[in-house]
Image 1 (cartoon, rainbow, N blue to C red):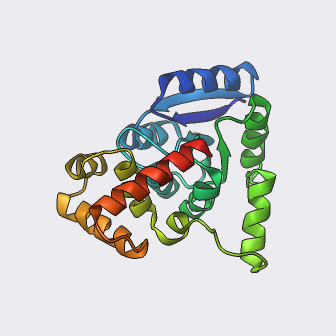
Image 2: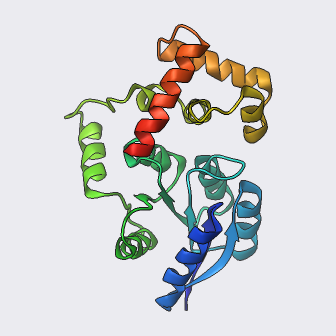
Length: 217
């Protein structure tokens, strides 16, 4: 019997490509496509998928939050995060949130199919390089993540920082994250303190540079 897969991505072209790739094998059927947290949880409840493939960045929420919610509501569902967001920044966060694997969207189709199979078998999927980094970090044989942004900021702070780097105003960030403006301002202050930035201008500059580095990386 074909395994049911839920796709959670706010790019229709990506979902279409994944659906074609998965169903062409004959081993999978895409039981639903969601672009936000609410529809993802609704479809997961209705279909009880064997696997959910989730992007980090969604139209109204952080994919990491979706992973946490999916694990709470459907603990038997395996989760693979598939994103353009840098693995060195998000892979460990994804696993801590409850994902069973993380891979970049620029990997070839055969790697995706291998990742899907590995995750459904109950194993963790990461790139060899990232798996080695995390193992060494766990054993204490390497330094923690050298990126102060990734190592010092919480998931929510990192999300706010990313929006700042993209030039999104505070009120809009609050709307996107379903938070109050005061709460977002609190995150901004916390980020400035952790990254030792003097003011809002320094924060914006650092955020822009970080986003550019991540997109280039």
